Image (tube, rainbow, N blue to C red; front, top):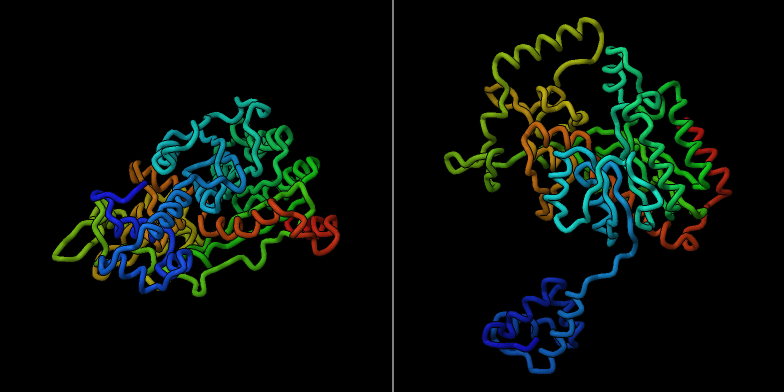
Amino acid sequence: MTPTEETPRASLIENALRYRTQEELALELGVKSRTVRRWLVGETSPKLGYVTAVQHLLMRDERPKRPDFTFIDLFAGIGGLRRAFESRNGRCVFTSEWDSGAVRTYKANFPDSEDIAGDITKLEPSGLPAHDLLLAGFPCQPFSLAGVSKKNSLGRQHGFLDKTQGTLFFNVVKILEAKSPRAFLLENVKNLKSHDGGRTFEVIVGSLRELGYNLFVDVIDSSPWVPQRRQRVFIAGFRDEVGFDFTNLSKPAVAPTLGTILHSPDEAPESPYTERRRGRTVVSERYTLSDKLWTYLQNYALKHQAKGNGFGCSVFSAGDVSRTLSARYHKDGSEILIAQQGRNPRRLTPRECARLMGFDSHEGERIAIPVSDTQAYRQFGNSVVVPVVDAIAEKLIPCMLNPEMHPPRIDIGRVSQLELAAYA
């Protein structure tokens, strides 16, 4: 590439600054920072030798970076696990998700991804591509409190006795057995530990240990990263003996509140979630509860309070931290309602749900939402909190890639026994 009238030398400098600061570019070229600034504003023009050097830098920048590791994304949902690990220079080589709405959102946000496989029970594990890491947020409903209550009321079996979803975990085990990746990370609802008197979790742990993996388990609350109290079980497994743990994860200096994810008057409007009115961006009226629904929810809450249980609606303000966003949020939004002065409270918009789950970053990155509100609420309610997974990935990847640099602190057998006993 040589500078032409269409690609002036100042433009060349602008391209180089996409990946580095003026100070960093100056250091790479062996010039002063103010020299780079003068090139950039057109006060002076870089000599041919510097132009050539910048061209080489650009070729290096634009060369596809070789991934540090490969992974597969099972029960992928809308790609929350993938988003965290791909941002740390991992490459996804296989995806499985059977919900058509989730697949639509996944493809909208990972358009260059491989074809997405559907029913995991119909896959031959040996035919999957080799990978370093297996990621799986296997289906929550058989183990969630809401799912168990619903199936009990219908007289249906649940957990590993459920004929439709309860055995899907064993498809994960078969893939681990066939492909033997270096590590895995599994995510599920907190109730997984206590389901069926702890026997379900015992089966899961026993299955993974029989494959020779060293296990680490913890329940992590998302509230240090996002303004939502959401507890989830994470299970990490490694082929090698490593000194991994879930403690001391990187967290924001200040825990966020709902004000950080709610729509603000000065942001650009986004139909159908927000609109511009009198010079301000406001939430669309469709998200404000009707008088009928608001009256019903208040009466429902009072009825359950009288019975001494905690069911009901919850109204929050900008300075609060919310309850858990669930997949049923599309029904009435009762678990997280936002107070409005002089008006009925409102639901979160799907965009606010994306922020609440950490899919939208403060740097401006936004997840595409190509589906209806109902589907979006269900998808975000079923997903992982991305910054939590990113904090785990920051610690997991070095242990996976360089186990010799991260030896176990004490006997690995004792680590596993102690940690797993606490959650059995």
